[in-house]
Image 1: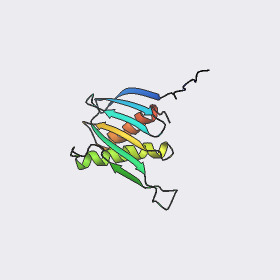
Image 2: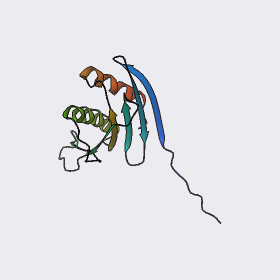
Image 3: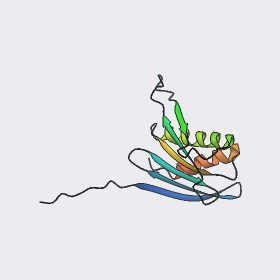
Image 4: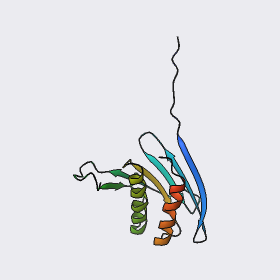
Length: 127
């Protein structure tokens, strides 16, 4: 008798929306151990930022998150880092404090644009 290998489905959604006149593409993919999101206004993955819940946080109601760039030879501008942490932490909290890997390539990183991007990410929710 042969065994049947069951491969879990990978759920993914994508959309495109104009934010402040700039075409913005979002792809959200759920893997078993993390959420992968690409948010781009350049058509490229851009800077990769990993956000994981910090297990050392004593207060479960307000979890802390650790931000890392897996490819350390890239220099991240402070503004890009702030945008990435804001967006990825938002997703991690929405997804029950799961780890998030975010690919970010933005032309517009204004507060208004980031708020609009959160709505676009929510429209692609796979968690």
